[in-house]
Length: 168
Image (cartoon, rainbow, N blue to C red; front, side):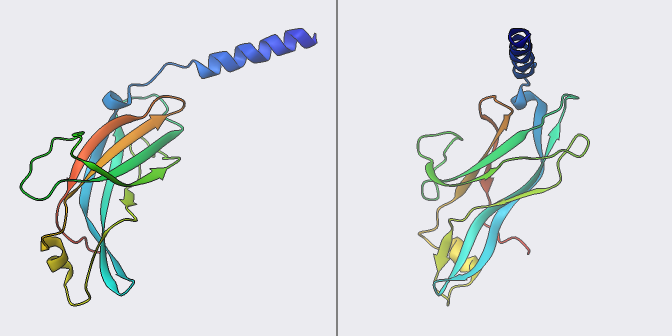
């Protein structure tokens, strides 16, 4: 009897783990995107701006995507004037934010606001707009990755962060 219950338990676990895989690149879409820079206030006596994006995920499948995890990787781009395609080795890893469980309300999520910890600082005499125009400022791109259950991470979008300060 014990052997039968163990065999049954292993069978149930295998069936549960082998559910139909979902192609996240095809079934998820980033919508309602608002990228920019968040005013992080004064840090160590300097004004600080950090990249931020707010977006929703919309699914085009009736399949459940629980649990769904999201990772946003912020990458610095080379100095202004250099065009860099997404995923280029010229992108410099900078910061990332991980969201472990992203719930859906129907076929979309609530707005997800993702703000980096790393940012740009300027002397107190510089306005936020002057920080964005400074010669040492580097543009940033946000790569949005998703992972469902035990699947691999899939990039579902890459978005350049415009040089604008977001309203609080």
